[in-house]
Structure formats: structure tokens, C-alpha cells
Length: 84
Image 1 (cartoon, rainbow, N blue to C red):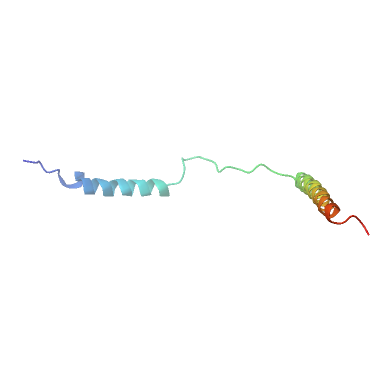
Image 2 (image 1 turned 90 degrees about the vertical axis):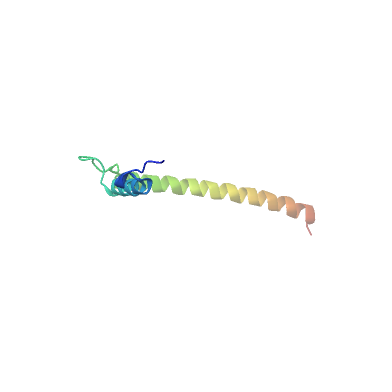
């Protein structure tokens, strides 16, 4: 004969308790006294320098892409047309 498990210790009851505890843990704030992560202070000069560097890099990339395209087109047109 199988012994029955009393009230709240039944598997279904334990599952409900586990879900409740899990949800309570998710809703709880972090440890007491924990400070939020702060973003490092970025100066305006640093932002402008970064923007300028990104712009210069983009310009060099675009120029390299244009040179490659021009070389390809010269090779294609050179094989088709030999001048008038």
C-alpha cells in the first residue's frame, strides 16, 4: 500500500511553491546596498574625437572601394573598346 504524502508536500503543491518562489526571486531587487552600474563619464572632446576618427575611417574605406571599382571598370572597358 502506498502512503500518501500530506497536504502541501504533494508534488503538485511543491511545484506551485517552487513557481511562487521563483517568481518572487525574479521580482526581488538586487542585494541590499548594491549600486547600479555607472557609465564612465565621456567628455564632449572625447566624443568629437571619436566621431572624427570614425568619419576619417569611413572616408578611407569609401576611397578604397572607389579605386577598386574604377580599376574593375577600366579592365572591363579596356577589353571592349580600344578607342575611336
